[in-house]
Each structure stands twice: as structure tokens, then as C-alpha cells.
Image (cartoon, rainbow, N blue to C red):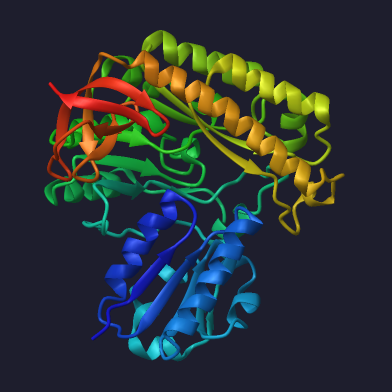
Amino acid sequence: MTRPEILTFGCRLNTWESEVMREHAAALEDVIIVNTCAVTGEAERQARQAIRRAHRDKPDARIVVTGCAAQIDPDRWAALPGVTRVLGNEEKLKAESWAPAALNEPLAVSDIMAAKETAAHLVTEFVGRTRAFVQVQQGCDHRCTFCIIPFGRGPSRSAPVGVVVEQVRALVESGYREVVLTGVDMTSWGGDLPGKPTLGQLCRRVLGLVPQLERLRLSSVDPVEIDEDIWRLLEHEPRFMPYLHLSLQAGSDLILKRMKRRHLAEDAARVIARARAMRPDIGIGADVIAGFPTEDDALFEETRAFLEAQGVPYLHVFPYSERPGTPAARMRAVPVPERKARAASLRDVGAVAAERYYQSLLGQTLRVLMETPTSGHSEQFAPVRLADGEAETGEIISLRAVAVDAAGLLAERV
């Protein structure tokens, strides 16, 4: 029997959902599941390429395509050679979608905008990973002009506290030392629940009700919606990891307004300053789009200067990618070669900031979650490699940072 193969593209939420599907589809033979992403055209291109390769290598396998790209344009994906079934984002998480008889139905894609709640699933294993993910929120009610994801994920909806706690507890009992809470629009968690609790309150409940959990981390958050409980946890709770990843997108106020973001550059600067005042060693990450429509040289320089001034060490930079049906796709475009050149320039800024940040950690004792026998990540999410020897994968060990290179930190056992 050949167990299902799962190819996952995109975000941490997709990673979690792939594990749900792995459990549901465990009894199926000769099935390849492709969990797509629609954030950029490149993400879709990679998924199409993977489907063609899978069909070429295993022509008798049934290919099931799901994820955001499939939800938004199911017919396009159903037409690819080898694809026998397309599942929507709601359907892919239902056990009945993976019954052998259901595989004969070519399309099962419902109206995601009608979704009202998140489905409860108990995931206890992330194949090949030492860090576990838990979905706490799904969908998005905002309409950034560049983003197609609300049409792939539907409206914002939150997982109840009890469901999240049960999931985290199960992962800890399975041996995971670190859990990452994830969602589409994380800081909107709780807005649809009784009493409208905040994400920070959820984090407090998780840490309080699962005392065995050693490390709790958040995925990407909106800069202006970080609540006071999150700030208190960052300052006082050692099990809450000193790391913030901001959904920044630009450092130019005019571009941020044209993106229809909820923050301006000064808002993000205040968040970064407050985080560093509380935890000087904190790791800061940010997502940034280069070459957004109407971005001329002067506006690009505003973003570049902002990132240089802030010294953000973990930059995820993407050249702008048109998403059909979004307002930005109708704006005056920046030529593609210029987008790529600007993205490369911003990555260089990030590389300088990363080296400076790693230098600041030299001599410190870091607690590192080992993801391979020789490498892992510190509490600040700094990539760390053992200078010599090996450690057990999944172990958290104390290491002293002794050197910096292009890949991060080299460290020795304390």
C-alpha cells in the first residue's frame, strides 16, 4: 500500500491543515494531495509544476488539489493533467471528503464566504517537524487591496479557547516542546466569540492550562492590533517566545494607504521600539512587498530607509504579484524587473540587519530547539548550528553563541 503523499505550499496554516488531511486520508492508496497557496503567482506556478511532475512520475496516482488557489479557481486546477478531484478549503478538513467513494466526485467546493465556524481537529503529529502548529483563527474580514486570500479563506472565525487548549495539550503529550499559534488574521481572534476575548488572553489561558508547554510562539501579527496581554507576556512570561513577526508590507505611508493597511510606518516603529525596550534581545520579523503598484523610486526609498532605520533582522520580502480581481491589480503597475530589483535591494538590507542582530547575541547563552542533530532555532528564532558534535532532534539545549556566518550563529554547549 502506498500512503498518500502531501505537497504543501504557503503558510503555517496550510501546514496544520495538511496534517489534518494526512489523518483523514491515511487509508487511501496511490493518492497525491496538493495543498495550494494563492498569495502570489509564483506560489501557484510552483504548485502547477509540482502537479505536472507528480503526474509524470506517478501516472496511475490520483491527484487531489485543494487549498486557497483551488478554492478561488477550481475549474482551472481540475483541468490539469492527472487531477481527479478538487476540494475547497472547507471540504478538505472533513473526514467524509476522504472516503474512497468520495474520490469519484471531481469537484467539491462550497461558497467559502458562507463559512461560519472553524472545524475542530486534533492533530498530534507534524511529520518531519519538531515545532507544532495550532490553528486558532481562520479567514479575514479586511480587504487589503493586494490580497486575494479572504476569497480563499472566507470571513474571520475563531477557534474556542477549549478547542485550542485541548489541541496544545495533545501536542505536548505527544512530545512537542514548542507550539506556534497560527491563523490568517491572528489578531482578529476572539472577535466573533462571546465576550470578544483577545489573542493575548488566549495565550494566557494556553500557558496557564497547559503548564507542561515549554515554548509558545505566535505567527504573523498586525502591528496595530497587538493587545496589552501580549505585551505583558512578552515582558514577563519566559515561556512566551521573544519574537514578533509583523505583517508590515511597506514603510511608506502613501503605499500603506493604497494597500488599505491598518497602520502607518510610525505605528510599526512604535511597536518595534516598545518590543525592544521590553526585551532588548527580541527577534523582529516582517513581511514586505516590493514594487507595489504606483511605487516610484522615492516611495520605494521611503520603505528602504524605514527598514534600514529599524534594523529588522528577519525580512520576508516578496516582489508584488498581481492577483486577478483585487483593486491593486487595476493600479498602475511597476515593471516586473524593477520589482525584482527592489526586492533584492530590500533583502540586502535585511541581511545587514540580520548579521548585526546575530552579532548582538554573541556570548549569550541561548536555549535552542534542535530541529536536526546539528541545527535549530533559539527563543528569538535565530538560526543556530552546533560548532561540533550532535544533539537529539526535538531536544532543547543551552548553547553559547561563539561566531556569526552567513547562515546565522555557531554555538558551543554550555
